Amino acid sequence: MSDRQASRLPWLLLISVVVIALDRWSKVWVGHHIELGHAIPVIPNVFRITHVLNDGAAFSLFADSASPEHVRWVLIGFSTLAALAVLIALVKLGRKFTLTTAALALVLGGAIGNDYDRIRFASVVDFLEVHIVHYHWPDFNVADSAIVTGACLLLLDALLPKKQA
Image 1 (cartoon, one colour):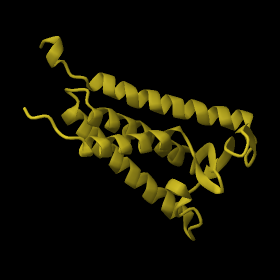
Image 2 (image 1 turned 90 degrees about the horizontal axis):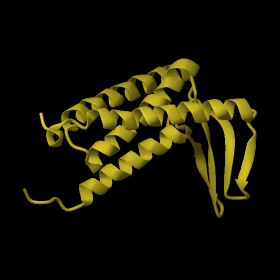
Image 3 (image 1 turned 90 degrees about the vertical axis):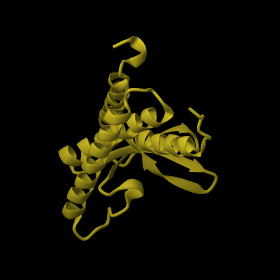
């Protein structure tokens, strides 16, 4: 197999591993340096590094459920299935490094990062807090950022005109 035909899958999986590592490192750092419920202002009235726990899904959906343990396991099941589907797609498409495969690698790393927290700690550490004028964006983390960035790249790739073969 020539270099031009070599699979790019190991490099794509490396992107996922880097996302997982940065996500874990950042959550551990926050846990050691910021007391739960507290924050460090970075840009006053705009950006803070916080320490909050999210028992729900994105934007704390389902966090106030009457059966949080049920919600936790549903979220674990859903994100594990989603991560497996993304991994299968990545294996099938991983011969080339494209916008789609890079996006899938980001989504995979983010999904595994948050799934790890839900499985091990029953909640996800969120720590990035953004205020834009009077709007407060729900706190998020590196894994969330990778998932959203990957989803945006997938959307961009879908909207870009395709080259004719």
